[in-house]
Length: 361
Image: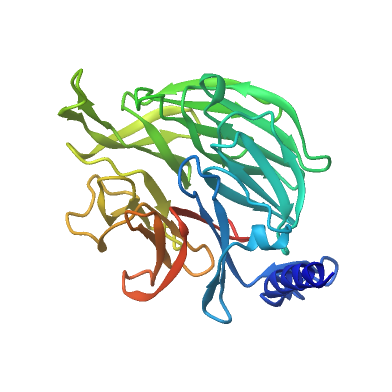
C-alpha cells in the first residue's frame, strides 16, 4: 500500500508541474483554452534501447523537467526513437519512429489518449485543421497517413516518395520532402487536402530534400545532398547541398541555389520576422547560418559556430534552440536569442532533437 501511495504521489507531482506551467488565455472569452508556458522537447533516446522521452521547458521557472510523459503515465516509456511531436489544440501527436507507432497524448498533462501501431517508421506530423493531422513515414517506401483526431484513427494512406520527411502546408496543398532511403531521392510530393491524393511530384534535381518552409508564395526546400562512398564505405566524394525554391502557384522550381559542395545541413527554419532562413543541424555539420529570403547565397560566417545534432526555432520569441549530445547520447539544450547570443544551457534526455510548441506560424 505504501508503494502504491508513493507511486500515485509521484504521478501527481509530474502532472502538477505541467499544469502549473500553463495559463488561461482570456483574449477570447468564447474560447478559453489552456496555453502552455514553455515548450516540449523530444529526446530520441539510445537506438533500440526504448528510452526515448519527452522533456518540458518551463518558461516561468526557466528550467527543464525531463521524462514528463513517462512520469505522467505510471512509468510507461514512449519507446524507441522519439522523432518528433506536434501539438494540435489539446492533443500532442508523438511520432515514435523505431517503435513504429504514433502516440496521442493530452498536450497539457501528457497522459496518453491513444496509440496507433499501423504506421511504419513515422517521422513528422503536420496539422491540417483542428481535427486532422498528416504523418509522414518511411515505411512501405514512403507514405503519408491521414489521422482523424476526433477518434484517433488513420482514415487514409497516401503513397509519396521514399524517405518522406518534413511537410509544410500552403493553402489546400501539403508539400512533402522525400529524402530517399540512402539520400537518393530528389522529389517533393504535393498532396491536395480536399481529396488526399498526390496531384504532382516535383523533381528538385537535387539530392535528399529533407526540410522545408513556406515563405510568401514560395516553398523553400533544403536538399542536404549526400556523401558518396565506395564499396567498403570509404568516403570518395559528395553531392552538393542546395536550397530549391518552388513557386506554390504553379508547383514549379523557380530557383536552385548551391549551399555547400561538401557539407550537408538538415534543418531550415524561417525567422520570426520572415526575412531570413536559418540553416544548420545534422551529423557532421557545424554552425547555424543565416540567409536572406531573397538572397542567392548563404552567409559565409556562422550566426552560431557550434555543431548541433538538431536545432529548432521557438515560435514564441524567435530564440534558437540547439541540441548537443555527448558520446553517451546525454544531451544539452542551448538556448540563444535571435542574434545568436547564448542565454543558458540545460540538461536533457538522450539525443534531443526537436521542440514542440503550441504556437505555429
